[in-house]
Length: 523
Image 1 (spheres, rainbow, N blue to C red):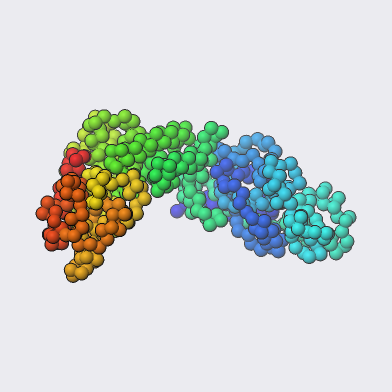
Image 2: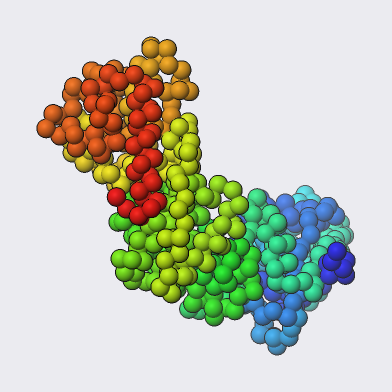
């Protein structure tokens, strides 16, 4: 168990705490969020302190790590001080500390006049309340930016009667002597601090280690958080908006420290992290192009497992311009992983194992020629649920066949179908309602082997028709091609095959095609 001395509670007076900020003993890292408090929250904090109510503790990190930090608080410039370490960085409580510093310095020079005006709060002695200076009206008031500075206060006091002076004296003592609870983390590793940091909740928004990493690597030329946000925007433009920040951080970890745990990034040299981010941007762009161009996958939601992106990104990071043989290897890996549902259990271990094999591709080896897995036996007999891993694997397979429209013979626009992932773009070949009339239960009817791609307009036109009827509407000249692209068995071309026989034969075709993809990487 960690020594309790590594987490130290203290309760300095508010005046002392604000003095520490001004002297540079307490710093705000650049990763902290912008000021977001409302005017009501400002008044509420001040009133709570005045009345001696608890307002929550601040969390500080005392470290010799030099984090990039703000040179001002709430727009108010701080004096230049020697960079003595260790110093205390505020990890949680920035909004409260910024509020208090701003309120008691609101008359000073600022880079944010609008925010400084919001901090210009007054105390109204006759009402014993706080108000923004513009809301105090003609009532007697004292600006809080004067009460902790004796010189300013002595100039103001003659304006008030004895009763008002007594209340102002009480006000001044309440703020000066308020003991602000602080918890300081000391002698903790970067990873331990990261773990603590991730568990903090500020204003209802969980913090992540991205913010801490941003501070360690920040410069005028590089802001990790901004780089991640920009990359997410670029991916959204490509239709891959489902990729999220945690997944990108795991990709970055795989490229910089050989793991897929983003917590490990805290031990990476900042220069290596910057280089890793540049590599990630190039590799993920190539990975998306591969999925769209080579595998017809237009949206990350179609990947059976989103984490499959990590091996693909590593492939393109190590082989920016793969040759035909290397592309064949990554395709074989893709189908072996997808159609066996490889990452359904023990995911992290298996991903790391695959990353090791992908490194061998760059060295000229053929690691995925050595494995001969089989399509998961019950994959296509699984219940059709649009978000299931089995359904996604099957849809990736069907996309390789360039499916055709049943009623026109034109190629289905996978760019539309696979980008929206709309349930109306998929069709039960033997419609569920039709089967229900034949006594086939919903569970038996709703299996992956009964699903094909279909444009929404055709889905509406076919609706719940008997396949024996709507198969007649398929253009005769293109029927063979249409059925081959949808893997409809030859025996079912008239639509009169009993459902169980249809499912058995179509499952065999799906397995056969799937096995070919596993064995060769393509059709």
